Length: 308
Ligand code: CA
Image 1 (cartoon, protein in one colour):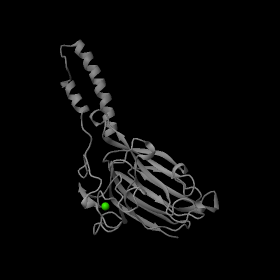
Image 2 (cartoon, protein in one colour):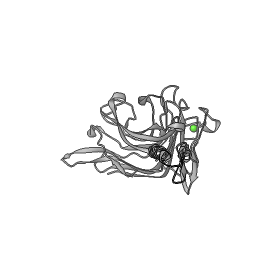
Image 3 (tube, rainbow, N blue to C red):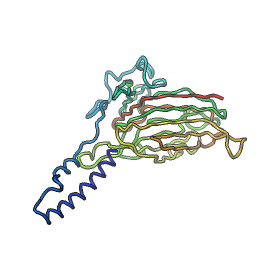
Image 4 (cartoon, rainbow, N blue to C red):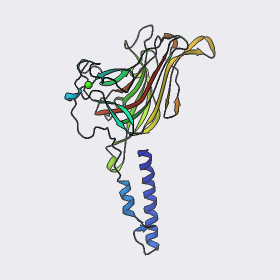
């Protein structure tokens, strides 16, 4: 909303300034229009971007003492509000929570180079939660629902290495190829910067689906498709279902699907080579930050697993 609002405001301001100049030439009133001065509109244009109540702002240190977990699961809260098993691979922060307007949010903050669990310069930092795995029988699925807010994502200045994942579908396959624990479809948020005094501020995020083209695909073995834009700190509903179903065109075949609903917009996708798939599973949180810092919030999380 911030990006749209600022664009609308900028257009409105320009129009009003044009009208103001026109009226200033045709009336004695030199700098006002309906009692509102040009300076008032200039003030609106300088409105700073949103800062969330639970946002880390300003400069930061890659690692912090209160982010130094011994193992990937050692520093979860006792009864976390978010579902799933923590996978903390960042020394920037440990899992925390905030309560805003009666909603308790899980806080997933990571910084570039902060992976304190894997060998240096191998895997990307992450703080995610993993969820139970469904089998590949027709009718089996996993379904995750929640609300997210995105406050900040990784940025290197280059599209291919920028952005941070907020959730992903994973699943192993037969026949080899790729990682031992392959990602299938990842939801990757890229920064949208503001204008004027907000030119260096992330004010909105474009969410892309990064989807495998072949089982085990990475790099050029994936496509990256723009889904939609959300504003910074905007509470956005998220539903993701990954599972197997019968192919309606051929009952001897099955479809492996990964369907998402983001802010009430549906994005359905069928995974390539469904017969090779042996699992459906979901992770969410914050993952990948090749430059800067990423801050994702999750609330009202639920997970369902059906094995047929
Ligand atoms: Ca940590």
